[in-house]
Image 1 (cartoon, rainbow, N blue to C red):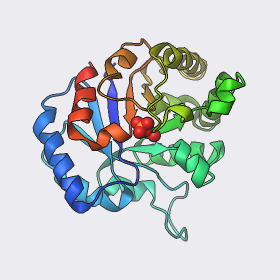
Image 2 (cartoon, helix red, strand yellow):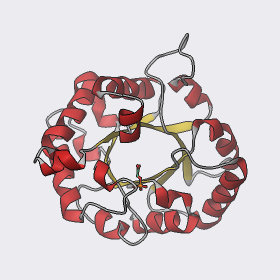
Image 3 (spheres, rainbow, N blue to C red):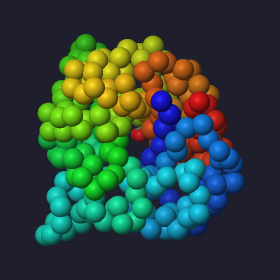
Length: 247
Ligand code: PGA
């Protein structure tokens, strides 16, 4: 299966910085062996859509989507609106949103459903905290998070992308070892297998301090099908090196 490398810019960028970054990515990406996406802040989606026009190596993604359809939801952006802006992927349930915006498993599952209904592929983020890992609860936590999505989507769960992002590895420079990540990915694959006959086609990304130096080893694991890249996605050279490692 084709791997996916997605850049999560988080709340970073400016009109000028985005233009420079996309120009450098376009110049260096060539014909990648994997799928590639960038997920800028919502305010810049239209700008980045324009900057990506006329090429198909790099797709556009959003960092969030409303769990509502349309209507009186001040501040929200619907999946239909994202679709109009050319958005192909939407990150849902990132741990930063679960923490700061109090998103729970049910919200995240509904967001995934909204995205799919609009023709957008949700990238569903799951992952345990350091305390949970230390208490031996990693499997329990990630299975609970994924099962909420399976429960709502049923067979359609075969159309999502999963991103396993251990919270203790995000932005900390402490990457999970390839073996640690693979162990969790295998658990998730088995859980998907029980839910859909398309489990082998579901891409399970790793995220958390993935960079140009450690990407190849992580991506060599049998159940790691790509990466969700934060910090390193803001530097064109680093992001392109990760893209090149994904074959
Ligand atoms: P990081 O972030 O690569 O900066 O650790 C990954 C993410 O939060 O998606």
